Length: 299
Ligand SMILES: [Cu+2]
Image 1 (cartoon, helix red, strand yellow):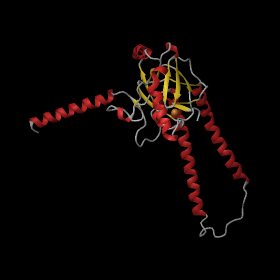
Image 2: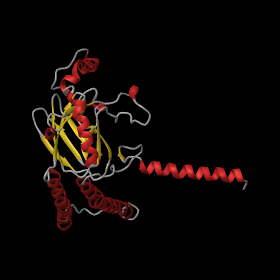
Image 3: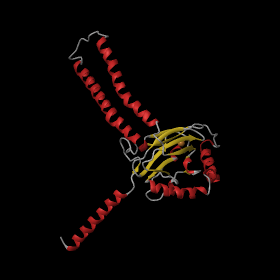
Image 4: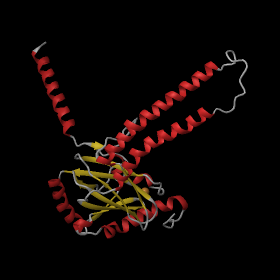
């Protein structure tokens, strides 16, 4: 190997190492991936439990039942083929087998129900909340409020395709993400102002309907720093696909810093007024596209 070739290999190796270090340092992000199978990686205790129930309890049971039924079908097709069984019997009832195929599924369902109910109550219970966040669904954006932090609130709108910067994710990027501290028990109150929406962040195991005039409650504790994406998953009108959710989980000191900055940034204009004419015009324009006139809320 010549000296320059050796140098080139050295530089290449250096770049490769620097590159992989950069990838490792890049923020953790949970988002849908092309051709993805299975769940997004869990980031909260609730989602850990959901993974366990799905992967370790339900999937083995489903697999065993599928193999068993397939085996039965193949056996019956072979054993009772007309060449092997030219004269069929006239039997129509068999008490033992009828009891079995009733009792065995009941036992399987009870086995599934026990961890299921435990998980449901775990998801439902907010353990000693450290903070509260109020999420409001609108056609077609979210607004977030931090009632523990005075009147801090802001709207979170999608970054439209034409405004995307390199590296930003189409249909998932927003102007103002929800920011939460890592390791804190966050109570989430979800409500709506117009039609039904649903606040869904797969990696948190949180999916809560946003219903007008109601407060639905959920909770999460994000256990690793990173960015988590979700979407409205209740069909809510023409721009249903354009109200993504982006949650950034920061270590507590950085979260406090963000809080200070956010209070200044969003204090100037309360979220409703800031939304103002521009948003009203946009909503009216979009709503008008379908029917030719704005639709009344509540559709
Ligand atoms: Cu929606």
